[in-house]
Image 1: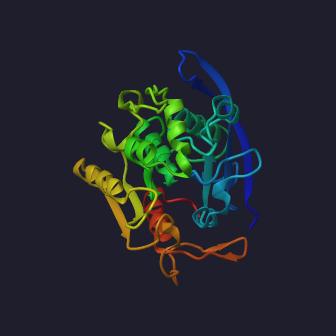
Image 2: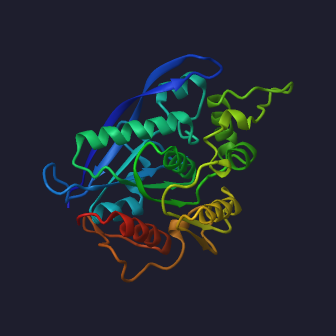
Image 3: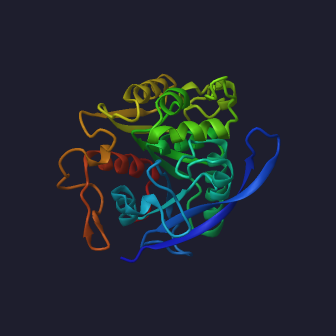
Length: 302
């Protein structure tokens, strides 16, 4: 099986920090195609997979390409797409680590622009599935909550969902996401040159405080001993979605720390094809759970 991939670039309007000005920067994206894809046959289902802060999307590489979940989806007839969510020139100009798009308005606009690029240029169903891991949890959730694209189902691994508790108060990578959040949202500084969190400026981009009902079925997998992203916040978000009448489930893993996809024994007989380019994929409970939820709502042509 030969999987095609296309790197692309989309223009994104970025609000300049501490300014009323807008400037357009180009952001990098990638779309991966299954062997079953054709330009004129049955349409292919697209999964938007929002990467975590451990990687990026560049002009010739992406974090998602090496992930087992991506390979499993491709092996079973799905296309997979991601964008960096933070233009390199913008990040360089304002001193932001390129791996931390923190689910900001820039990131959401970038994902929306990338969605339309893919829908308009390839033979894809308009309704998509959305997944996110770690920081990709806040990118994916804010994308879904935006209501700007049609989403069938959302899934995630150890998702960041709280800009204050998880990004500002307890940032990873020695505070890099806190800086990104503070600069992008133009937080002021106190007399000690420390950023002051401002929920009003983040309004609409902090999922845990969202006033919107979650618009689609939702599954999160989270290890209870995750040392980086708070398990209780994920539990709270799922409970909120259930109260809204949404089909929502939290798979609480007893171990796995921040890598739920690595937890547990490999499944002997997964529901999907587990051969990718002649590679036998090791499917764990978290990967199988996400794949099962996506398959339940997406019904791709395999």
